[in-house]
Amino acid sequence: MAIYRQYLLLHPKQRENAYGPYVQEILQAEGLNGFHTVNLDEGLPELRGDDLIILTRCFLRREEMERLFTAVESGARLVVLHPSILLCDQFGWEPQKRAVHPGWVQTGEGYPGHGMPIQTHIPIAAFQPHETVQAWETLAGTVDAGWQDAGCPAVASQQVGKGTVVFFFYQLRRPPCWQARAGRRADDLHVRGHLGADPGRRAHRQRLLHGRAGALRQLRGALEGAHCTG
Image (cartoon, rainbow, N blue to C red; front, side):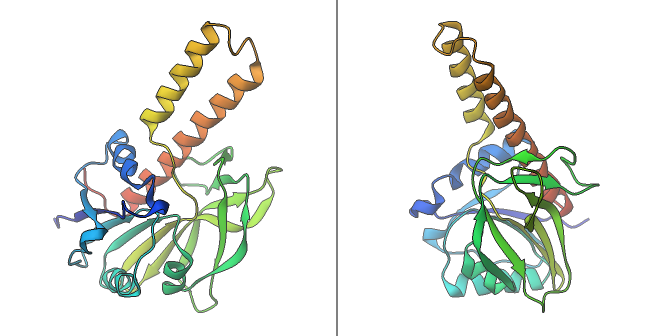
């Protein structure tokens, strides 16, 4: 059986990549281990057709985007978190020049996290594939606050040559450990009476936790579908 190399690509000096380093914690929390962290400030490694690659939110040079595209064409699996417009263009996706905020994610039937829509609490960028893009599917759709179809995917998969790219059109901003710590702090405040008995705040915190768990299930499902080992 083939052994897939697994890369987590970061650009820590870019402001847009502020949450990139914590994706490793997200992966480990889901039991997805074995990813080699790459600092793109030091260059993109040589990629092969049997690689599994996670690209965190950042901006790449044109040459780097072309190398990622070539790797996918050769059979690599690429998962992109909150892709840039230029990277989407490389794969044939066009911006709709709008965002859905607050965004709600409706996972497709048969995929991890299917059921009630989950709120991202951050914008979901609206993209659609160009008419020349044929082999793609929506893994999770975007719905508005009224749970009506917003006309753009939240998570989409595309076949490119021998490989696959999965786009998360929103950012996974906080690892589970942060969310747990935030929950504990809120509980401590509640005990001391600072939050009182406000059920609205408690419900809001529960929605945050539910949304984070749903996003993690989607990420795990995307990676497992891309032959993630671990």
